[in-house]
Image (cartoon, rainbow, N blue to C red):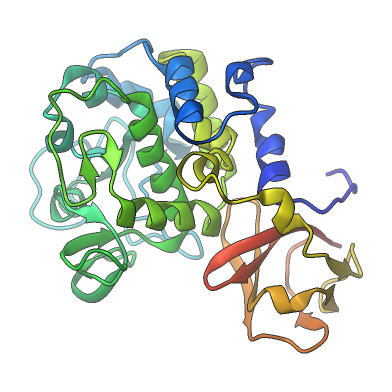
Length: 354
């Protein structure tokens, strides 16, 4: 691992992951914001190579293989511990189910009823994931959201219940925090990929044809920032591009495109002016990490690994330095430090723990 470190915010983090895209892939989108950017990205990713519905099972071997043929199921995974159950690719396909742990099937994160079962989005891998059949059934075609009072909770903590997200109070499904960004970027991909191709699509609590409703887009923008792009998503995006559809999810390559389309008044460079410094960096395990500078700009510090899993969180609005005592058993490696304000990312920094 290289011991080179630099301050980075959403823009530069996106540049890091966009190195996975072919040179020039997004050239026609350069310098654009708002609707023009959405149109440009649509033109880049439209007309992809479609696979059959049956071929999705085989594609999961390379898009959602956790290792040794274990299904990477976002509805049952427990990133910080042992999953309650696991599935083997090709062996545990649904099938009938009566409870969790019976089998896995093909979850359309943008439900089929929302796009009137059209054939192309029905097999678009960028929004289809292998998930537990029973949990998939409980999610049904409900919108994603943040649950206030849960009526049902899965064994990994995903929830169904009334929505507490401002702008909607109906029933929603809430995945665990570690995969909220994955699903947000999948839905934003769908909105852009099928822009102008949604004439026969239906509507939902979350969408009007291919447009995401205002309450929902604010939620997805926040999830996109709270749960950064992981190596899992980068690998998946590359496999879909190289081996199957030959198009990419722009929001995995460039997560900042989300704000640039749906909140173009947001200025990442202006956010970067909030100078905050980490020291020491690199830091030893068990040492105290200090954050100094314009610390009044944020009210929480979250340290994540490169897969987006939270290692440490400290809250409170500091008067001076923000001091974070790192655990003695914290693994060596590179981490993302998210500086938060009102549950939204103000900026990112990069940290090495020796």
